[in-house]
Image (tube, rainbow, N blue to C red; front, side, top):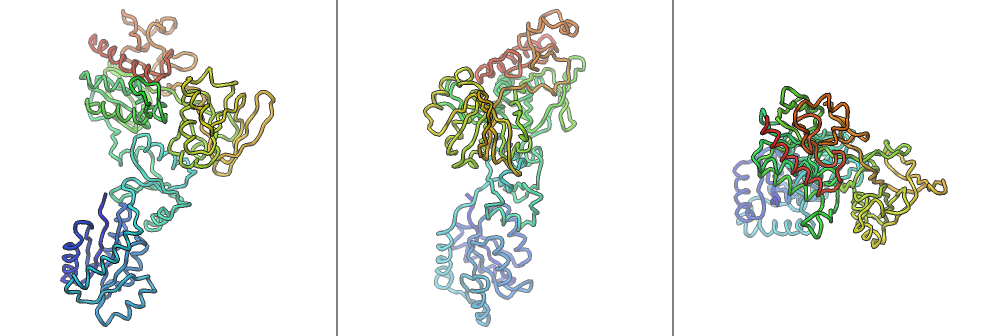
Length: 553
């Protein structure tokens, strides 16, 4: 934790040196000492300290300075650090001004020159002031801070990105948080430029895009090599497993992810049926472990970065990225997984990110505190999301079209939900409409048996309805099934178009697409089991076939 600051200012360099010397001798172990001879420079320094999340415990300012009086400086310094103690150093002739300043700028104490010996005339006074400051001091969050509106889709996007990449941050709602308002005032930021992301180095970005935030936090979106043995597109469980096995087996490996590692599994609050974790683990924890493991083996993780197409040139794969750059690779593993289908309800698009969320949206759980929320969907992801939200919301309502959860959800989750008193199942029902003004306020629920509707007030709707493969970006003539999932292996033979494109004497490998050297693994593949363990297995298996492909080429 950073040390609080004692800030001294005096235009007389000899006096300032004496102040700093005495402060360091008595308080150097517990405080940082910052000093300057210029009041204007001091105000600039205070702005920078504020943006870095520093804490100033006490100001010690000379009264007679050429740029401004000490009282005026303390008045302006108060806008940056209103809780800091304020002391004025005066000559005997200025004591009357100091007394007036006690009321005008809420001066805490004034000290007349000289203060020798400091053990009698300086330190006891400072000790009292610092003890008073510490009695109210709450250490500031050290890290990224986001200032914005709670119901802003843009704010949600940035929070979701940082949490998905396991980057700590503090959320400051500009409508209810005084510190947020202070940050905007100090930096003269207009509310129309929100959200604003403040970084530890004191810099900030107004309404930034995700890639800029990623680069600022040290993430890499540019490839460093001219050629890779294998490029894995998508960092869900299958992609992460492929990266770990590719890197560990000596392949030059790149892993490309457009948002955050983990895919749908990464948003799960608890995975309880994954081998080797009897107490379960969160999707984010599984992702963190896997990324750390892959990095150990030299895998290059490019994120946030989006692949828009793949081109074939001879036997090489040219991967086109959304920023216009390319990656050259000898083989490719497509592991882009699936995404939740859009809810077909009136006006739902208006509130996406402002009360309507696809997936668990764990970043918004705190905003559900003591409120009734609704979950749409009856699969495992919906059950895990409902269990997580039940720790915050007063009531979680799961809306499903079927009579019960038995055909769509694992029994262990069904049993947990039954034992959770604040979760209710609304069966044979569908959400058909959303209401609100700038943010979600209510939903319409249709009873499929009686064909009647009712209106339910809620600030949050979490959607987990079915899966659609993330394959619309693939520009190659890759064969997909009727739902858009990628076909692989012997299943390709039944397609007439396969025989027109496949010209090798051998059959495709088990996870190989109709384009030699392009593989698919995990939920994006037709016939996949849609479980974390099977996705991890397919990712590892894909690398086995990559080796075989590279050996013949």
